[in-house]
Structures are given as C-alpha cells and as structure tokens.
Length: 361
Ligand SMILES: Cc1ncc(COP(=O)(O)O)c(C=O)c1O
Image (cartoon, helix red, strand yellow):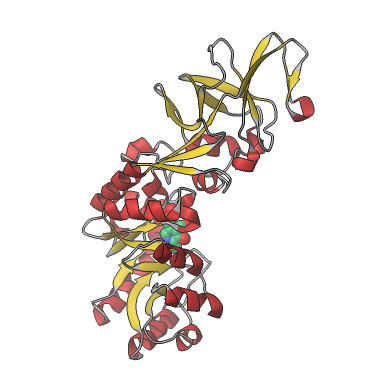
C-alpha cells in the first residue's frame, strides 16, 4: 500500500556517515548529535545507527531527549548540551546524562554523581561564560567536590560553516584555556567541533567532535554532501493520487496561484504543509515521478500539492519523491533550503510528526 506521505530513513547511510566522520576526526572520538528527534530522522534509530558506525558518545539538547534515549535502550555516554532548569536537571540525572555548567551556583545545586562539562563561550554568545577565569573556577569547583566528576571542557563555534576567520578567533580563545584545564585534569575530554569544524579544521578536533548535520548526510556548508562523501539518509515520499486535465484558464489550488495557459495534465499528491512541505514552495519546487522532475504548480495546501505531469506519462499510483533520488535524478534537502532561504537543518526538522518514519537497514 502506498502511504500518502512517509519519510524513508536509510540507517545504513547514517552508519556510513558516522564511520566516515569518525575516520575524519580520528584519533578524536565521535559524538553523534541526535537532538530534535535526530534532526527529524527519528532519535533512537538514528542514535543506534550512529553508534554502529562508531559514535562513542551521543548528545541531545534537552533532558527529555536524554530520557528518550535511555527508554529506547541506548547505552553509553549521553551529553545534554542545553540549559537545565532544576526540574529538567532531575530528569537528566535520572537518565545518567552528563550536563554542561558555566556558573558556580549551578554546580552548587548539582546532586552527587553527575558528570560535568564546563563551557567557555568563545563567541557563540549563547550558553557558557565568556570569562575564562570563571570557567576555570567552575571546573575547579566541580573537581573539588567529591561527588561530582569533571568530564569535559567545551565550546561551540558560531561560524564554522561560513567564516573560517571567526572560527580561528574562537579557537585562539579556547585552545589555551582547554589545554590548561586538561593539564590539571588529564582525564577530561576537550571538545568544540560541530560538523563544519570537523570537516574543515583539524585543529578543532581535540578529544571529541560533536557532529549532527553530517551524520544525517547533509552538508553543513549547504552545498553537495557528496563532496564530503556523505550520503543523505532521508527521503520524503508520496505518490500520485489523481491525474486530470486542465484546460487553458482552469486553475489548481487555493488562490488560483496556477492557471493553465495551455492544456495541462495535473497530478495531485496527498502531502502538504501539514507534513512539512513548506507553503513557500508554492510554484517553487520539483518532485520526482518515474525519474522525471515535475514542477510543483499552484499553492501548497495543508494536505495536498499539485504538479505538472507534462508528457512524463505519470499515472495514479506512481511513487513521488519530494526529497531523495529516483532514476538518476536527485532532490537534496539543500535544494529546498536554497529555495526557501533557509538551511537543510530546518528542512528535515520541519518534517512533521504526522509523517511516519520508515526505516531501511
Ligand atoms: C552545542 C552543539 N554542538 C554541536 C552541534 C552539532 O552541530 P552540527 O549539526 O552543525 O554538526 C550542535 C547543534 O546545533 C550544538 O548545539
């Protein structure tokens, strides 16, 4: 049975991407970032595939996500990278997750048994302290408390994808601080790199790299993931539910944003913005059917889109690929991102919960 909309997730691709990133990063270890439901791919299966490819750490943004990993049966170290309220901290601790700290007051409130990574803000301007002395005091406060363990020293890059100059500035701030903490506490992990920094800057690898986007086979530089031997893991699939002819002057969709100028065969696919096909793709996307690129015509509705079937011969029942490959043609999440003026991250995170994820090994 054809499903109206599904996201096909190639777990083998995630595993191979992780293996590739682990090789690039080596001897540094790989932490797979699986927050936001594995960037829309499904957190638990993505995490398992990344581990199979050699990821020895997992990272999430929230305590609930850490709990979800444990409930999904995942073992091994998990880092919650986000800020934690007292209530969320309890959830993170119960999930045996490592946490991030940058204020002494937060450390004072930690229960015994927690593993702590101290964050220096070297230019991202979100979480962490900009004051290296404060970061050092926090690290020493953690190390000095019997019940806690200092597990890491970290930062996060703001421009690894598009401004190597600022990346270098952040590295210059981070490296001496991290070296000093590591000299005093050789057992800790120093980590900084996201996918872009992992791929472009070996000096940012340290002990561990935290890769998200590249694990899923998308390009952190918004270009072609194949340039880095990465394989997109997600395909967004629908099918042709209806084909009919429009005479000149007849239209398709809300607002009549497509009006036939000549006899046109119009196919209707039962997928729409309720599934994550953003409305801004109205008259501005292609769909693959029978190996042909068919233009999306008219307005994207909540549950349907329409395409110009042309002379492709597409018939009802034919599979339609919105993101993915078919017959030598390919539509990347990066293509959607370009059309939408956004980034590939938002494209796959935006595929809604209504779309079943179907996993292939
Ligand atoms: C702190 C931190 N580290 C690493 C990552 C992974 O970044 P990317 O998906 O660009 O590899 C993220 C994701 O945004 C993050 O917030």
